[in-house]
Length: 429
Image (tube, rainbow, N blue to C red; front, side, top):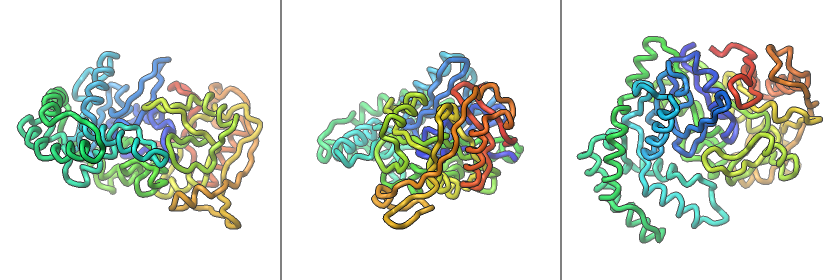
């Protein structure tokens, strides 16, 4: 196997960054294929925390090349800041370690203004966006009025493009939203400098990856957010603005579907959600607060507290199906450690009906009540476990039950933020 897709199998924040970091020593390329600076992958290496919003998690391994694919909408300000942070900390010493697709779309200041003001106008009906301009940038991409990196790094093309697309955008901000945003000239002066800084990294990354595949190099495609936030298959409209499922890895990186060998879904041992939208297994009680505190459940991008609840096998099965997952990685098993019992939602109750599939409409999902199955808890120091047979019996029973409920194996178990806090249960590559 040479190409693996790693995706979130819940509402995001599953710990994909750590899983990618653990797998990176086995690959040659790590590629981010969707989302923007609304994502936050947290990595803890020898006690030092690194939070990445755009650059793939594999960047902390010097041998590996990282790629920001064409499916990502890139805020150049955030990207330059992230590059600077990594270089100050001794990473990204060679520019060859990072490539940015010349087809990736650019997040502009006007996108952020629109995002924040529209969310404010929605009031109680807000989506819960990060306010980073991601949705408006994707809107412009689909409407064919976006700005791409191929233009950002060429001053003449940048000026022409901004003069064509920004006047209408500024009129909308002023007349409809009642706000203000930088002028065309101010945006050009700022972004032409950003383009010069980023130009050394910009190239045709589809061609780069195609050649890597031809040479049978190992590639890991890294997603952001999770399946329940996918714009097509998630809890719409409380979703992100991109395709978060494995199929998006192809269009978002410029490779064909025949190149994909396996799909690894990442799930927490329980569930969390940031922002608005239905969450059937949410625990708005002291136990939910315990999970939040013990699991440090605060958004890496916004700092917002995450809503916490029991594992939802209905949503997890949905994620496995729409992603075509071949295996699961389970994170934060340590957070459940010490609880006398563990619950898993195996179905939903809707009136007198029992549902085993995720409803399409969120108003139906809001009315669903979880049907729980109770399993024994576990104790013991997980860091001392060197093989699956060393794990506490309750945890082993939990893993087996999740495998039965999803139909795929759990191949990797994580039980802490550090690199050493994990156990491979089966070979992935």
